[in-house]
Structure formats: structure tokens, C-alpha cells
Length: 82
Image 1 (tube, helix red, strand yellow):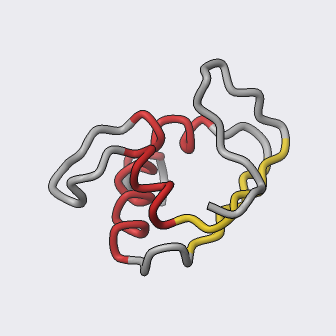
Image 2: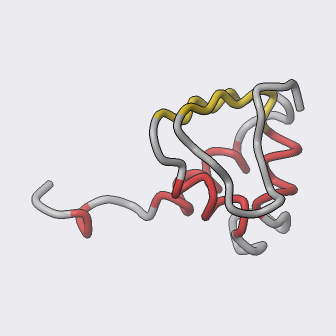
């Protein structure tokens, strides 16, 4: 890989991984800025899943650890079980 254009879009990658996972089985560890997680939470339904990002995370993620992120909206993910 020579540039960022050589890799898949982060939101698409997250949505694909979550959509194919069993409900409540995913753990996400965010180290540093969580720009991609924020974009995931704001993502609309698409061909990968009929759920928007917040709904997809709520259904698939059992726990999220974060460090270094201060959400600028009322949306937040926490280290509590989903």
C-alpha cells in the first residue's frame, strides 16, 4: 500500500464487519481519536445493513473501550455492555 486510497473506507469496513457478526458479540477498542467510530455512528442505512450506524452498533457491539475521545454530540459509546 502506497496511499490511503489503497485501503477500504473505514466506515464501510466497520459496517461490513458488524453486519456479518452475530448480535452482541463485537468488542471495539478505540485508541486515540475515534473519528471513524464517530463516522460509523452517523452513517445511514446502506446495502450492507438496513440499520443506521447507531442502531448497528447497539445491536452488534457488546462492549466498547475508548481512550482519548471526547464526543462533540450527545451520541456516545461507552464501556458498558450493550
